[in-house]
Image 1 (cartoon, helix red, strand yellow):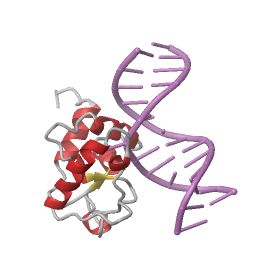
Image 2: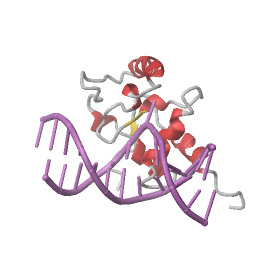
Image 3: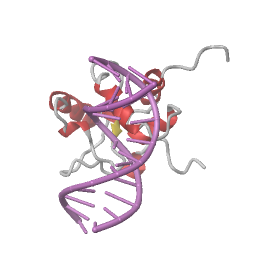
Image 4: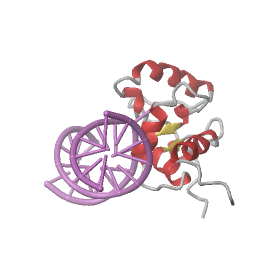
Length: 113
DNA sequence: ATGGTGACGCACT
DNA sequence: AAGTGCGCCACCA
């Protein structure tokens, strides 16, 4: 201890970076991992500003396994990049924009007592 | 300090 | 099954 608690943004970026390749997590889970359950919205806002960082924001999806920002306003440009990144990791997205085997690729695993 | 916004989440109709 | 409304929390003016 000793170090001041990291700003929410830092905690979120760290949580997203912690998502293994080929896996996906939800905004809510990221917020939870960041120590602020319920702040899923804020997580999205932060990721929107981190699309040009080394943060694999493409691994973060909605609670339903739906790719959120992909259909957003200014996210269209990055949507293509994100989609390509997902494909590179073997993560397929259905026609409805839902991740295939979402529950299986979800991170962290819900089975983590 | 107050008000408004937003890559969300969930319940209800 | 699909669409709508309200609530949650952090950040900016």
